[in-house]
Structures are given as C-alpha cells and as structure tokens.
Amino acid sequence: MIKSKVDEEDYWHSSKFKAFTFDDEDDELSRLKESRQAVNNIRRLVEEDDDEDDVEKVSWSGEPVGSISWSVKETAASSQRADREPAFPKISTVTPSISRSQSGYSLSSLFKGEDGHMTQIDRSLIMTLCKEVLFRELESRQTALRHFIHYLSETQNQRLLLELHRALGRAEDAALLQYKEHLSITDENKRRDFLKNCLSLPFSAEDLAHVQDHYTLLERQIIIEVTDRQAERGGKVEIFQKFPRKALILNMPLITTLYYCCFYHYAEPEGTFSSPLNIRQTFKISEKQYFVTALAARAKLKAWLDVDALFASRNWLGFTRKKSPLSFQRVVDILQKNSAPTHVLQDYVALVDDGELRLTLAQKHKCHNIVINTYRDMKDRQLLLGYRGKVVRGSVEERKIDDLLSNPQIRWKN
Picture 1 (cartoon, rainbow, N blue to C red):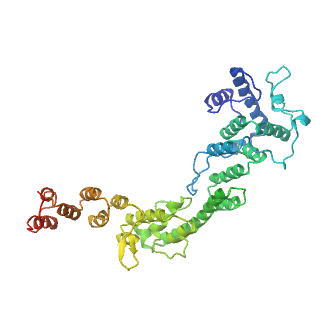
Picture 2 (spheres, rainbow, N blue to C red; picture 1 turned 180 degrees about the horizontal axis):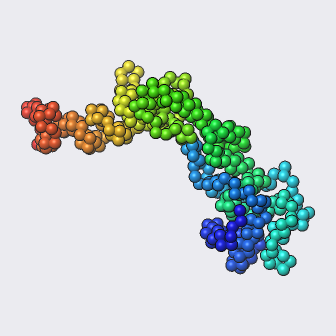
Picture 3 (cartoon, rainbow, N blue to C red; picture 1 turned 45 degrees about the horizontal axis):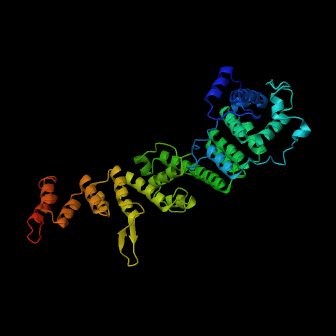
C-alpha cells in the first residue's frame, strides 16, 4: 500500500522515534533530511506487491483477546535486550550472506549517488539481495533497527517484520509475532488448531507455558460451551432457566472462566472439565484467587451456605472456625456489594480484628448487636443511650439496650 506524500510527511512529523542516518555528520538538520529520504526509499525497496493490505494489524501494547491475562510488550523486550547485549544478535549462519567487500554494496551506496546526494533506488535489484544487504546494515545499528521495526509495525508489513526477526536470529520475537495472528481468527475451532500449531514455535520457556495454557483453556471452553448450550436449550437445568447466560464462554480470560464455572457448575465433581476445582488444579490458580472468585460467584447467587462453607476450617482438636486468605474487611465489602442480608454481614463484621474498624463497619451496615455489645464492653452508658434512638422502636435491639441500661451489675463509666 503506497502512501501519498502528505501521509509520508505526517508519519515523519508524528514519529516518536529519533530519526537516523548511516553516516556520522555534525549537521543535525542535514542528518534529519537524509534520514527521512532514506527510509522513504527503504519502503519502496521492501514493498514487493499490493497484497500487503491483507496483513493483519498488530498492536504490541495490547493484551490479546481471550488470552490468559498476559501480553507481549515489544518496547520492554527491546529494552531488556539492549541492557543485556551491546549489539543485536548476529545474522544466522543458515541465511546466505555476502560480505560488504565481496558484494560491493552498502546501505549508503543504495541511497546515495556518486556526488553524495540521495537518489532513487533501482527497482531491478534482486529482492532477496536487497533484503540481505538491508538486514546486514541494520544489524549493527541499534537506533536504526528500532526505527525500522517501528516503521514496519505502523505500515502493517508483518511479513517483512517476521523475515527481519528471523534474519537477525530473534527467534522468540518471530514466534510471538506469529502467535499474534490468532487475533484474526474468528472461528473458535480454527483458532484452537492454530494455537496447537504454535506450540512447536521457539518460544521461551515462560512464553511457551502461557501459549500452552491459552490452547488448553480454549479447548476446554469449547467443550463447556457445547454442553451448556445443549442444557440451556433443553430447558431442564434449573440454573440456566433462573439465570440465563448473557454471553458465551468462548475466548474469555481464565478468571472469567473460573467465575462462570463457580456460578453454573459449582457442585460438580473434580473429574469434570467444568468443575471449578478442576479449573483451579489444571491452571495452578492460587488459593487466594480461587477464594475471591468463588466467593463473588456464590454471593451473586445468594448461596449463603456455600459462602459459609468457604470459610470453614477445623483445627487439630476438631473445632470449626472461620478462616480467610482475605482480610475480613474485604470479605464484608464483597458480601455487601452482593446485597447480603444483615445477619450474614454481621457474622463477618464480628471477625474484623481492629476494634475501631469493626465498630465503624457495624454502624455502617446496621449490625446493631455488634454496636450494642461494643458499647457495653466499653461501659459507655452515654453512647449506648444515644444509639437507642437509632434502632427501631419496639425492636429486639431496643429491648436489649433497655435491659443493659437497667442492669445494676454493670459499672458504667459515665
């Protein structure tokens, strides 16, 4: 795709990258002008046909839709490579190469005439030779290489960008670029097959684990979706009738999938694909993340017995007590957002360690018994008397306050 001259000018004026040149000169204005013309000629050099419009646009700063909450940061990766290595990796010896002295070509000779001025590139040069010369010259020039990569990304020339990564021995970058192509595949079965083929690409160990998880998750989502769609249409599964699904599970992130399974398949045995415990085990989800997700899902359904069961813990004497990987203040917040009744909230407000915070939460959520008991323990008659006016007249709470105020065994401090 050929841009107009106005578009080319806009590209250079808007580019955030420093312009580059391949000859060291003191005149900064001259260097800028030569750089702009040079890269304009580079794009003529690398455009082979008009099929580039079909190349998928890739944004290196975004997270892939349907991935496992991970993203590829090109800028960060480039910075890390720059910190580790004084120069970019050498061109693979597998690629045929011609030394500068043997070929008689250099990037400067491609862009400059005998008088030193810029000239048009000869389109009759063999494309493979031109790319080889270009890649070799870019190899040792870090600023120029980064600028050119940015240029290829903006012009959506993914094919040449992939060739460049391979020629420079940047196998992991090439693999990640190929993996990004899954974004353009809309059919879930074809996307699954594509991801399976990506497993053979030369990823780093960490990235390969992410791609494996992505493939496994999508494969499982397809199975769950088929089963649940049939159950929903059959009309015999109560939860699908009472809480109709608002979206398909396909291509959803891992935690969304876990929430879905906690919502619709909570009681299923661990051996089934849709079991929340199976999801947790397969994808190594932490205890805290699983707890938060399950709590939110069961609270949304108002399944308070399931909520209580999440906190049940037995000590070595066999006594049961409530235990949470979250602070109980956070637990109260989650329950309150899901419209938990007062008697449910009260059980968890009472477990907040900090006395002042516990009292504040009790007042906020109208947990009257906690407030009344706190003022009793403080032996503060005035506060208790003042709180009497905030409870319902004739209620159990009002009678409890009256009994305390008239109890001669309590030595009030005021």
